[in-house]
Image (cartoon, rainbow, N blue to C red; front, side, top):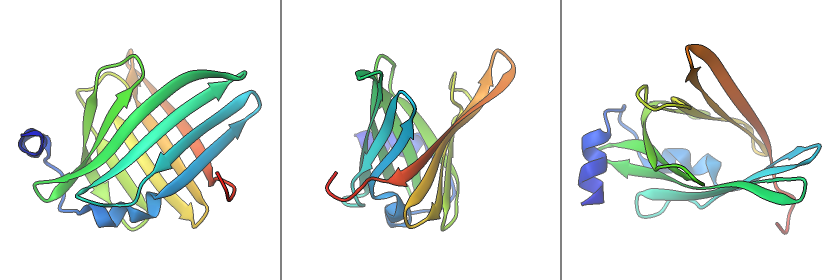
Length: 148
């Protein structure tokens, strides 16, 4: 049933989950007062599972459960952030080093972008409009140290 609902929402270009395998692993963005972390499983069963958390001043500030799902020949980014409703962003474009997911009707963000910068660096980016003003937030991730 979920696959049928997602298939109805997807209108993106042809893609399969294996094309996102480069996102697999643990990623961390260290900030002066905390960290933002994402952990992604590898592709399997038509899905990649992700988990994110933001720790600031020693306290959990936000967390998010995420999936990149394969349905009807394309992909979608499904986010369940702490304190917010689930949102689905269909794939807009995909290259060997960049995935862009977009839902123009969503409040903020309207776009979720992941860019591979090398084997140990990925940038996550959310962008869109808030009150008619363009806004973007970048997350320059490095691969987590071994053992994390």
